Image (cartoon, rainbow, N blue to C red; front, side, top):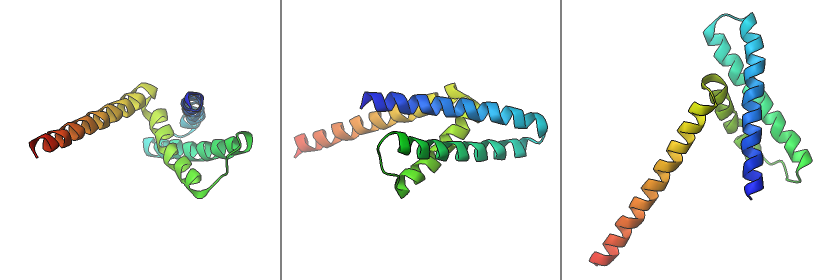
Length: 118
């Protein structure tokens, strides 16, 4: 399981790097910031979906609609990482995970307190 998580994070970083390189080349051609962000998202979408399709051929897993939907959702993370940097992306993801864990612990403590009161 840890190996798949490592491979997924490595692929995410590689996708962000590829998107950054491709969009930097396109950015030199297009000076409008709005067009640049749209290009970043389109490149992220295409590369992420293509990577998932290629991975489904390399690693034995079936390509279903929800995997394609997850790839499309993942392209937003790739685009965010390409636009604002790896560090900001990972900082936001880890902050959200920490907040979710803290909320879960608080809910668990509250439910245990209610059981004690009853």
